[in-house]
Length: 384
Image 1: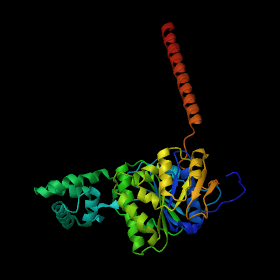
Image 2: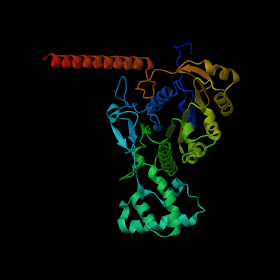
Image 3: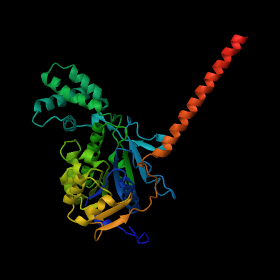
């Protein structure tokens, strides 16, 4: 840290294992992740970024060159409002799923229908068959719900209660986005989840990661893929259950055998499933002051010494300790400046307060002027 003229590089070979970027809010973890993505892209990486707060949607914008503009794509669902306007980001592609492409097993999994509830699953399967016979592949969720509602079958009524849950997942459109439009060599796909409910974000993560795992495992995509998960504690929490948790844990356990690697990012390592965190053989740790989170870091990394742990609360913004497979020995560094624009920076509170103050003063001034004008007008009427 104190020798700024000494460059520190991390080994690309170390990314044959999973990685975690951990820090408390405001310490610079998303900024550091952006730098890491820049370097991975230069090496030819394929990456998918699950981005709940639109921290990376400006990654295509470079401060000096056009290298990134053709190698970064931002995806949004049709219903997403997003943190930033589309005009601010530039080109945005649509991520959507055609409802009729879902299998009965997909529907059962999403709706929380257990395998042993065979009568309910059969009711859904038979109803879909009737709807498909009548409408072909053009049917949607509403058509399935209407068909279940019109049935006097008791199992259909039970199924209806579960299928209606899908109405909250606003991702269904006219066509399913091809996973190969997202997986491209030397390309980063940002999945902008900002503005979406947790339930919708969770389903998108589940669907996207499941499709990615299946296509990598079946060798239909030949290159390593890096899955970057911002706010990882929301998708793979320590104690709670989420739809995407099982596929993330499977990728953590099996993904590296097929060339699928996780980079999980969180401000609350103690809230992440410990099995997943322990699979992250490399860690980039910025400032952490919470004792529970420090303990989670200590437990998950055998390379993290007590001395390094004691240093974590004193790190400045943008300073980090890196341990694991990506470095030969634990090292303390200052993250280099980004080449691309950052989307996750905190607002400038001072300037925003000053702006609010000016707006209030101007509003008060206009009000006084309007009152003076009205008084003048009334006076003229009286004197006239």
